[in-house]
Length: 122
Image (cartoon, rainbow, N blue to C red; front, side):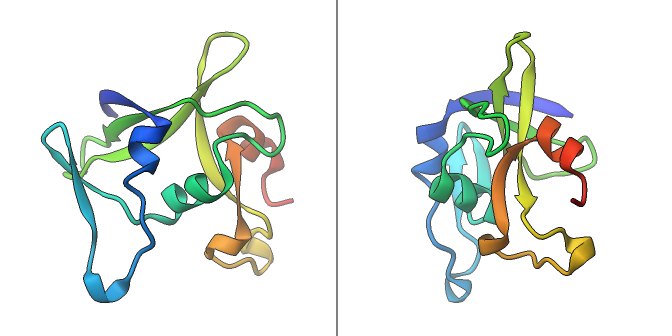
């Protein structure tokens, strides 16, 4: 993973707008990189906040990252746990996909990676 700059929650979420398919993809420049800003994950964090619904850990910053094989950077939300470790935040499917849940905003909740991993497809 290639990791770059860190941004506040407000800096990133202030650029998240409702996506209109007619307008095409919405990109915003962050320190020289064009970032696609209409993802359901960003919209979830803007709608529901950045606190894990299970353990109440708070996501406090975004980091610009990309996998080595990707060309486009994206933002990942992180919080710091009691052991001073960075914990990734995810969009969890309330009704798991394996049980018929849909990939729609109303079926997502904010969850840290640790809690999401424990929850699995329950």
